Length: 171
Image 1 (tube, helix red, strand yellow):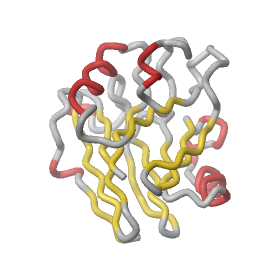
Image 2: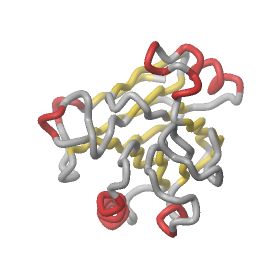
Image 3: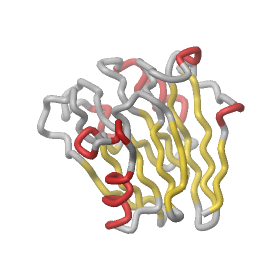
């Protein structure tokens, strides 16, 4: 599976449209990890798996979701209710409970990726209001995962790959 993961746009609808236009033909799925500040019926969500963040007041968004894409199970949430600002243990527990291959989350505006017992845990950072790697103007990630590896390419706000942040993990 190849997926684009983005989070925390905080009202920046244009960047979501730009991301869709650039990656629509090259990824299998789009995951949005919350805090869009858009309504749940916005047409953009017809092409993205989205969850509700702490700044999303439309109850039409789910708090978490589990999706299976090309045989890969993804657990997705914003993370604020799981205390991700203090660590990812609770997130990992929830994702492992559904046998997820990936756990995607947002909230912290800080990019990070690691493996937890064969599962990729990923925060793409914020594409619009980053708190880490601010020199890139924001980040999102493209994840390519199969039975043996998980590859993560982070992109800057201009949707240019950031080679020094590229990571490949063995599963």
